[in-house]
Length: 131
Image (cartoon, rainbow, N blue to C red):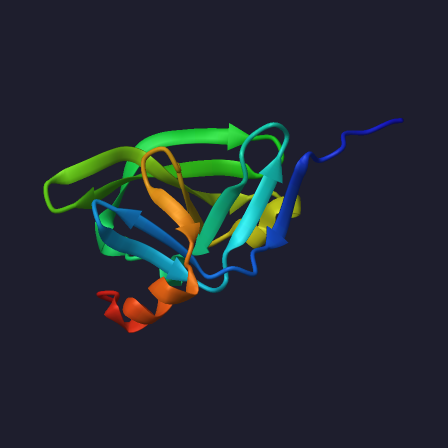
């Protein structure tokens, strides 16, 4: 077999997804993408327009993936609590990862990322987000 096989698989996530930090919803969407890559746990990407960007500040950290492109990182802050470099976004994506442009993902060990159960959905409507 010749050539490189892209180990990154991007698929639409059919769940209503939410990201929470320090009890505050910082992202809420019905349009998440899930990235499956090698042995890594699935990463859930939120459309930027469904992320409360007032909680994120871009840092100087950058990494490069040979399949997705260059990632920029963000510190997440709520009140006086911060999680440094807890979110990332592929600002400049490679061809096979164009779907990730304008999406943001969160490290699940620092930001709670999960599907929204039907009971939660009714108690905290999307309109409650501050944007």
